[in-house]
Length: 183
Image (cartoon, rainbow, N blue to C red; front, side, top):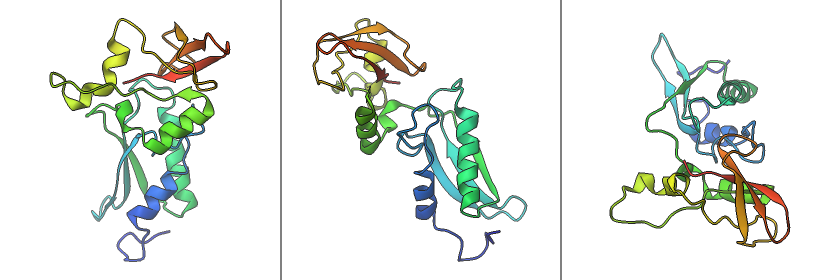
């Protein structure tokens, strides 16, 4: 067991690297770090509650993967001999697809899921809402096919394999694909 008061405890950078190995259970190509779910990692040195605290913000509060993600984080920490850890959920600020890292966006696309498409900035809209424009618009966003790059695609369902994705089809290659919606 790690002595949390000892200077030999793992660095927060090491812990972030370990958490980067924890994959999202619904999209196993992307880590919970690159998806932007892990918001904070800190040591709690309080004598009554010492240990590691990992703060997560779920993609949405009703996501069925939330409990699995918490368990997977704790298992990953236990593999590195961190036996005293807590995963706390923070719902505010709400998760946004803008938190997905560039590496995560690349991984989604290579896997065949189009990452959220950032919208252009306007002076009338606060920065934190920019990524949400597409999902709230009446018209579906133009989403390029991840297989052939055609922009001649259409949404066939607002819900894909999970509630956070929409189902599209390419009119050129005929392949269906998921689009990770802006949130």
